[in-house]
Image (cartoon, rainbow, N blue to C red):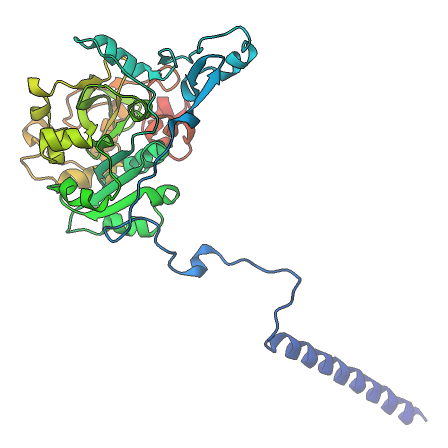
Length: 414
């Protein structure tokens, strides 16, 4: 009897083990079997962007069909009683409160004119001009702004700022690079400035005869559209460009007097300003410069009495920013090493061996690249023109241009 009970227990244990093994096999079979039908409900994991491979290119090339939009200026203005006011330059809140009794546009600080459409920098340029300027506007349709500039690995940060800061103002960015490199194309393929890629035309060109080559691809180009060109480290004033789009009868060509920043917006060159860049209409470029875009930014040409035009900016109100050596130390060293001796005057540079530690020391102490010129400290919360608005609004992204991390005094004063 005892032996029978013992055998029965053993058989029961073996049966339980076999049942467990059978259940485990069924579970693995169910998990490994491919499902031919996709369930209509349940949890699904979305693929990351990397799983989709190469995304469709959104920027333009010379093979693209580029059509510039025609936009009415009416959407940028608002009626208050009998006054037509520019929205960006008008204190809309106070106007609505006093709508019944206020018959004039109430301008925000930094804006002027009957319709509050004249930004400070342009208003001062008009006042300072020797001959009276009778600005007419607003126009029925906006002028289109076409902005041409070169991009390389040393100007990537500033190109990013320019495109994002001016993205809603400029109608077409023409970005070009030398035939010897594919750096810019690689960045665009990797979604550089993705939000505005539909406004970017990529071209391989050395800058010579660039506009003559490009203009034939712009089918609906108008004679009063604006051509803007500048060097790699120049950031034109956004408000000034908005004005040029909406008004007529301003002198040509337009030049920009930039605030001269060094290593970032926290240092200023003692010279304070530098003149550069250029803008004019399509017809002016053709008639005065024979479509040679390089003459639009040539200071020797623009200093001629024939091309007086209008300079935007003075010692306290700037037509933009000239950000000199605004990069990290390693890129500055590489940039200087890539330049021929006739471009950099090495006789003026004390420290013949330029390395990362040398550049870091210059940034910390506020000394220019020549090792001699003392820079002036800029104040982030005091200077109206400390940096472009987009940079200030995205300080987490451009903190290295806003804060001198090599200076302990600046670092702990954040």
